[in-house]
Figure 1 (tube, rainbow, N blue to C red):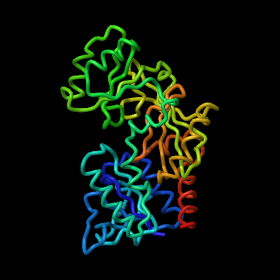
Figure 2 (figure 1 turned 90 degrees about the vertical axis):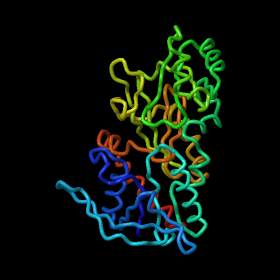
Figure 3 (figure 1 turned 60 degrees about the horizontal axis):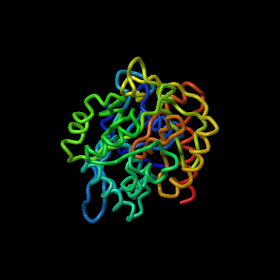
Amino acid sequence: MDFLFIADPLESFKIYKDTTLAMMRATQGAGHRLWFCQSCQILWKDNFVVADCQTVAIKPSGTSWYELGEIEQRKLNSFSAVLMRTDPPFDIEYLNTTWMLSAAVRQGAVVMNNPAAIRDHSEKLSITEFPELIPPTLVTRELEAVQAFHQQHADIVVKPLDGMGGMGIFRVGPDGLNLASIVETLGENGTRTLMVQRFLPEISQGDKRVLLIDGEVVPFALARIPQGSEIRGNLAAGGKGVAMPLTDSEKRVAERLAPLLNERGLFLVGLDLIGGYVTEINVTSPTCFVEITEQTGFDVAAFWLKALEKRLSLT
């Protein structure tokens, strides 16, 4: 099989923990052929969606961990599957890429995650579909609404809707110190929508990433535990990643959402849970394969590939 990975530049990969690289290694190890391109190399040309792409061979060691072939132009519907692995932010160019990929789907391409499903699932706003599973939450541009929410809950977290890796997350305690300034800055004086949630003290036990693959739940989560005085567990913000089995309550939540999201075309999903509450539903480029595999022995990339091969055999 031929697999096209649409991803960020290969030289930007953190090779010791990169999930896309883990996927590539597993795919190559199973005898499949790897192709690579960036989203800027997706074109509409001669009435087809094509990619200026290159074969990529993953090397076992050495100063350069990959070898690229010559650039070739191929229709996206000529690949066994197209894996969209470009990291957020979800900006206008990301959106343009999903529209191009939707055109490729209409031409018969297999794209995972489905680009329409990615567009329909804001990684933060999608949790509002499941109000019984989320902490008290406010989405607004209005400072007055945030202030009233703070009055009600005393200890809150404010974050932008398009952040990643813990970027732009602020906690405001009972004293309300700098609340107006934080909201005005993050919200660019009322021109950007913010999400506000009650602070969950369970964050001290970790912001847990739970992986859903083709409607199945990976049995281990990665708890991203804040360090020192930090409130953010995100690994990009210095959190410590500790893999652990899912609790019964986490498993119930994950098993409830997994088939529903899968039916919508979301083959790979990363649920974020704090204290059993769903705080995000990551669908653009979920990570944490390597950390879970190294700490538990459960090979997430192999599990993902087996599910992918099974899915493709049925199409």
